[in-house]
Amino acid sequence: MIPAALAEQAGVLVIGLEVPPLYRSARGVYPAVFRAFSRDLMHAMQRGFFEFTRVQTPARPEHYQMLGRRRVVQAVRESDLALAELGASFDFLLAVTPVNSDSAWKEFCEHDYKCTPVLRYRMLDIDPELGKRTLYALPLERLEDPVLAQLLRDKRRELDRQLGLLDDRDTPRFLHGSMQLYGGVEDDLLEQAHAILAGVPAATREAGPRCDAEGFRVRAEAELEYYRAQHPALATTVQVRDDLTSVMVSHGDLLIPSRLDLAEFRIDALLAHEIGIHVVTYANGRAQPLRVLSAGLANYESLQEGLAMFAEHLVGGLDGERLRLIAARVVAVRRLVEGASFPDVFAELVDRHHFSPRVAFTITLRVFRGGGLTKDAIYLRGLVQLLAHLRGGHPLDALLVGKIAFEQVALVDELLRREILHPPLLRPRWLDTPRTVDRLARASAGLRVIDLMEAA
Image 1 (cartoon, rainbow, N blue to C red):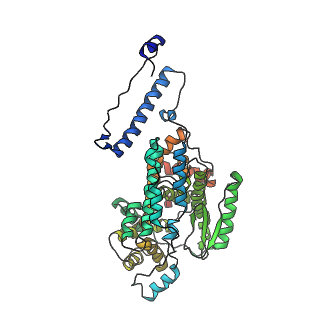
Image 2 (cartoon, helix red, strand yellow):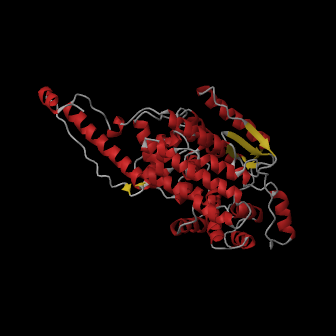
Image 3 (cartoon, rainbow, N blue to C red):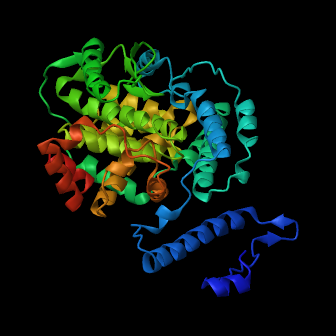
């Protein structure tokens, strides 16, 4: 500290800051209070420095957060790497996806749709208890940057819950853990789902050209070549597999079920969904200093699926049948949480909402897998949240820096201003076409989910 006499002689104004130790307890500190207080104090000081710089110096920083620290210290890098490696050591969705869906459907038919089919899963090659030991050996309480510490703590909590779900797979405990991770179905979301199912007629599309697994693989490889021209290090592979029922991206790789039977008009939409969002944000996350941006920050899936569904709309592939499907998933999750049985949910989808038996079975199977997975409500929820985000005048670009959640957008914006994170490396191919720009402008002006089909 500058001595008072020297400061006076040099014309330096010395300002002291006294911080009340309200975070202290008789046994040390209140951890939650200390973390919140540190974050608020940091922002308050940044605001003060920002005003001083703006008024008293020729510098003109655009935002007070630009004055924050711009270095990722070794402790953060080590913790980030450990979390990313643990997350990459298992694939949660594959682990809770049945490997016997075809035989389960035959069993269900043989019993006249009256029994709950027996589902079988992949063997686990990770011990959830040892994974949790690794998680909580990380000294995240020592990280000094409140924003980075919060993101990593939230990711640790999510991995903890995923590991717990793997331990509870195919038991009654699984549903309760799933609700902790993904939530249930709130009343207003259920209301929107029912509005879609009532307002959008069941599919009457005439039979048209179809695409099989090999045809889709060829199109996907061509799409990836476009991105490799911008980023030669893109390591995404395309795999056709016998143990899947739907297309998915896992750890940056595109997985295609060998029995894929896709309407040709849906190819562009599915490419925009899986590659234009899931692969692109994985690659963008891999290019960031924080590895968890590629694995996904905590609760990232709602924003990811909202973006992916919106991408389907922008390329003209979000038709009524697709909207009805994501609405039906919401209804099925709500009925699961309310205690309905597998046959009851199936019957409601067929009798009340007019889905074919095979489609209704697939929806029900996805919701009841593992012991009750509420994840499928996030597609409609994420789309609703994304439209609200666009109505607020926010751009899409910041949402593409990696796999992030809606509640983390402000934190990611801060890290971008501090130059800890970089702008997205890849931009989705479809985002700058004239048709896309027009549809994006209309959505930003204010559209409901059901309007996306009508505006297609």
